[in-house]
Each structure stands twice: as structure tokens, then as C-alpha cells.
Length: 191
Image 1 (cartoon, rainbow, N blue to C red):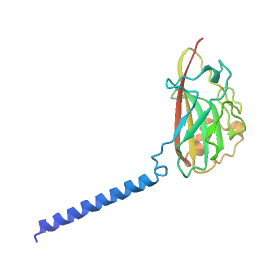
Image 2: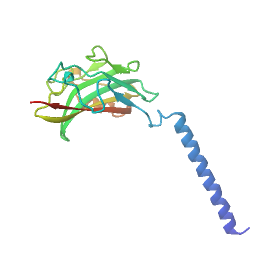
Image 3: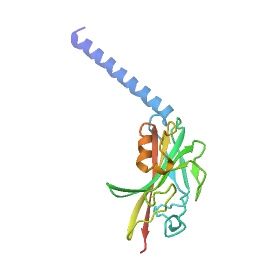
Image 4: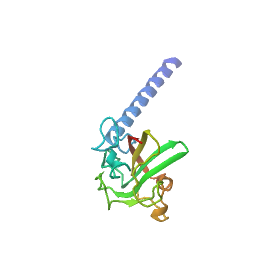
């Protein structure tokens, strides 16, 4: 056997070893997709149709109710959830309407006008520790984004609830967020 023959055998061996490693990695990924980051984490609402329009009753022009939400497909190691609803008027002008954290793992949906679940943070509309219905100024469609976060542990927040803004919660979740899912809705005020 010549040197080229030995190199050829070595290259075949390395190729087969690489293929075996790839197959093992794919098999591990399929056995536990939630832990690998390939989740099917979804956030939905029974009141949002395919056109993504937010019904008036969930805004300041209606009842100002919280939207019913459901989520599924979160990672298996999730311990609790947090929720933020916001609107980006521009990259530097972000308004938040709902900050809710410490949502227990046993809760996987929020009914319309939810109360008594999780811990409320503040909103940028009036600064109060409550949900504020969207009420953007001016006509035209505006996008509102609901984001549910699957967390590996409870958030460690040391400030009073009245000081828990979107940014405070995002910073507290920075290293414990396993996955997130969003629901984007559109509302156009007729003013």
C-alpha cells in the first residue's frame, strides 16, 4: 500500500466519523427539540383573526379589556412565564402597555380582563401598575406586539412593582429566557 492509499482510507474514515457525529446530533435534537432551541413556542388569541386586527373592545376606544391569550410549545425546562405588550413608534420611542411576570408554569392562557395571575409592572401610558389599553395618537394602523417569555427561573426583581418597566423586566430576564413567542396585532383609530 502506498501513502496515497493510506490517506484515502484515512479520509474515508474521517468522513464516516463526521457523518456519524451529524446523525447523533440530529437524533439528540429530535429527541428533545424544546431543549435544543427548536421549539414550537406559539402565542395566539381566539379573538384575533387572520387579518391580525385588534378588536376595538381591547383599546381605549372600547372597553379597554386585556386580550385573551394562549401559548403552547414552550421548552420543557420552563419554570414560569412573563408577558410584555408594546408598540414601537420608532426604534427609540417604545411604548409599553402591559408588563406581567411571575406567571406560574401551570398557567398557559390568560382570559379576557385577567386579574389575579402573575405580578403587574407599570405601563408607559400613565405610569401606573396596571394594564393600559392601546390609545396611539393619530389615525392610521399601528402595530402592537404581545411577547410571552418562557423562563428557566423566576425573575429576581428588587424594585417595587410600580418601578418594573418593560426595560427593567427585559434586563431581569436577560440570562433566564429559554424562548419567546410573539403575537402582532394591528389597530387603526378612526379619529
